[in-house]
Each structure stands twice: as structure tokens, then as C-alpha cells.
Image 1 (cartoon, rainbow, N blue to C red):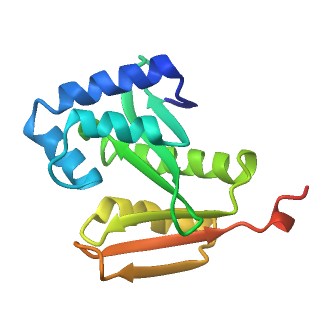
Image 2 (image 1 turned 135 degrees about the horizontal axis):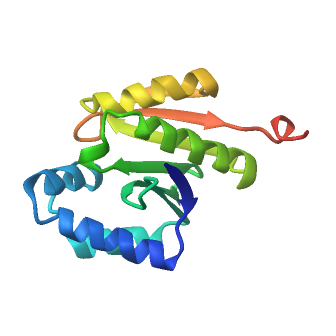
Length: 165
């Protein structure tokens, strides 16, 4: 398994995999949960094209396992999102993806403010964030009740003195 920054050909391949997943109920459910209801391929295509950075995770046989994306929010934080495709969930790939991308954001992209959000019902993502905070102490953790459904938010602040080496 390996994770890499997505190039144009990777993005096009990712879009094709997602398009095929949208032909099955489990795929529709996955993306509706991740991006909000009434999800369409066109909506996802625009979302992916608008991200500052996209990474893909592939198996050793070059099968797409999932992807991660980074975008700047209005509050000055970068938000890290990720999706692991259903056949690969609950196998540890989510944590591997998030940790690798997290280190890339912190060490190489020099991002100072990072957040990850998950609906309070998304047990898998919450487990990943709880495990991640053992490697990278969080700055803040709270539930935003104004979101529908309520969302658990983890934030990290990396100050420049932590990067000097």
C-alpha cells in the first residue's frame, strides 16, 4: 500500500472509480454521508477540482483504496478530509492514510492550523482521530451542535518553533 499526491491522471482515475461506485447503493450512501445529501458525480468532480491538495491511497496492485483532500476553511484552518472505499474499511487503511497525510501537512506543507471533523455517529472516523491524537496532541476537541447532524471537531495548532530542527 502506498500514498501519493494525486496527479491529473490519478484524479481522473479517482473520478472514474467514484462514478462507478455511485451506481451502487453503498457507494451513494458513502458519498452522501461524506459530502452531504443529494450527492452527484458532478458535485464530487467540482469538489475534488477545488481542493488545495489531493492524495490517493493505492494497494500494491494499483487498486484505489481511498483518497484524502485538503482545503482552506473560512476560519483560517485547513480541513483534512478522507474517504476509504467500502471494501477497504475497518482494515487500518483510514488511520494509515490520515497519519501519512497529517505528517505531510505538518512537516512539508508547513500548515499551522489543521482540523478534522466527523459526525458524532461516525464511530470509525472518531476512532481514527482518537488514535491520531496520541501521536499529535490536539489543541481543541468539541462538538458543534449547530451542525446537522452534530459534528465532533478536532483541531491542531502547529507553531513554527515546533518545526525548527
